[in-house]
Length: 425
Ligand code: AMP
Ligand code: GLY
Image (cartoon, rainbow, N blue to C red; front, side):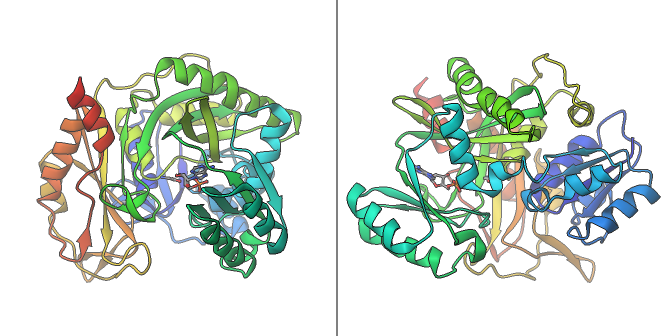
């Protein structure tokens, strides 16, 4: 099978790593890819927003399956445009991708199909939104409706903070994404990420992970795309997993079908495990980044075979197999991230880190004059397996010590919740 993977981050490097081990793979291409992915696939510089160019590439290179990593091309209708040209795609249509592309869409779906989530109200002007916040009091959560690259959410601890967030949204801080604002109840509990592989009808659970969204140790400082992750997350017990499937994922799959927008691809449920049970914080329509980097090393099945079956709507019901080992990934970011990451700084020691037992997935890297340099905010994902999360983290950090990158930084406490739980056992 010839495969075109879309994307350029650590998530796509982890996917390329897994796909390239598949016995059914012939050629792997990646658009646009990165230097790490380039060791496993042929990177092609096509503009991902030019859907006709991607379809043309697929025709010329006899691509049998396109696997889309990030959400933006899905929300922009890449899957629809490729399928219309006869190209098989693993990833949702634009209508189904509204589960991530529009928070209001997902909230309405939850209302209609009784899916547990935070109570909310929608607003298209600041005056009414602020009046609602004053009536409800703090803490309270303010969200821009559309895609805002993970930056459109404010968990406000005071009414004043919530009002500032509302004003920012309507003043255009998130462009069109902030034209509508959702104000919702602040849920209390532990967060977990849960993933399912979906073929339009059926959702097969993958496994759980937890990420660390804040930039600083002790989960402090601004939100990021994620500074590290581990899998499995023991808070996602079999009982909670079953509830999540029955109360959240299955009604979503049924609801999407009823709306004429069946969901195919990876459904990523961001959950809050509250005292009343699991509640949906948000959906994403793709793998998490960096969660994918800890899922792929633990997956024992052939992801390419599964993605291909899902694209054809013929996924089997068999549970997937996962390594008994835990996995952890530590994100190395460029200094200044997330506000203003410094790019162009030199990195060395990646292969030394790999000899030390880690897999180093590339995110924002580039080659400059034969040297590896940082080209984005999140740059490397140093990933390791171990008997426990504690030992996986230990190996990842020992490998990081081999990497020389004076202008990079990372959190030293990835996995802390799980490590504390493991200590207490
Ligand atoms: P989102 O982009 O919707 O995932 O939100 C980013 C982060 O904001 C989540 O990972 C949560 O930590 C937090 N968050 C979002 N919605 C809520 C909520 N209703 N209650 C508490 N925290 C929330
Ligand atoms: N790690 C969070 C996300 O991928 O959205």
